[in-house]
Amino acid sequence: MDVIIRENYGQMSRYAAEIIAGYIRTKPNCVLGLATGRTPVGTYKELIRMHREEGLDFSEVRTFNLDEYLGLGMNLDKPYDLDQSYARFMHEELFKHINIKKENIHIPDGLAKEPKKYCAYYEEEIRKAGGIDLQLLGIGGDGHWGFNEPGSSLGSRTRVVALNEQTLNDNYNAFFKKAGFKRSEMPCFAITMGIGTILEARNIMMLASGGGKADIVAKCLEGPITAQVTSTAIHLHGGDVTVVLDEAAASKLIRYEHYKQVERLKSQYGL
Image 1 (cartoon, rainbow, N blue to C red):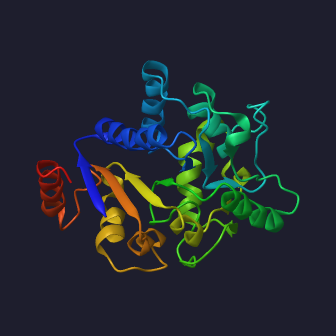
Image 2: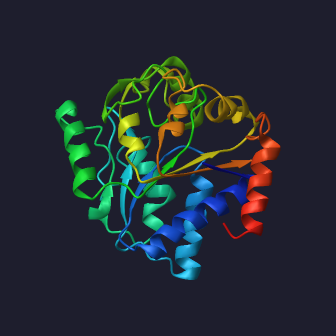
């Protein structure tokens, strides 16, 4: 696992975007797993810049998003139908600015009439695409990936989950409150890829930014593997794993100097 520490959010976002762009340039039809939330927005903005200024081509890229609120969803032909869906978030923050084909975008359908059957279908679509080449992840305030709340099985698959109080509060304050929603109007369930599904991606990149994530980043990277902090499953992945942090998010790491030294040595020896 490579832990990359950059001075600030902008530098962190540019580094992450370069990694994603490298996958696209090497394999134009690569399959990317994408995440919502505030942390990846800077990375998406940099990818948009690369597309516009450097010709980064998304025309054959296929994407699968981690999650969506149950009861929310969006027809990409009518992007303003449901303002707080993750589908709309992705459309506004990335998809409408690049040349990705609509049929290559996969986001869990929170409006599915039979959610359990739909979850099995989503798993099958990932398999049919050949699996995910690079899965982009954030980390929740309680250490979750996607909507895999504390206590989720580390072997879990795409499924419907109940959201816990911290996630509801965090997401309400970040997204729903400013849109004029009442706390009681926020969805309490979601569809999410499972931890087992995420770990099947060939490569993983996790981002974290800000001092508010410092404690949970330390638990994720330097604490024991536990279902109570589902992101600790990062240690169970057998492929390439890259964690990209800004200085604030890295500030509680016991092995901070070690991670910096390893990066310097790898750069020095071209590894």
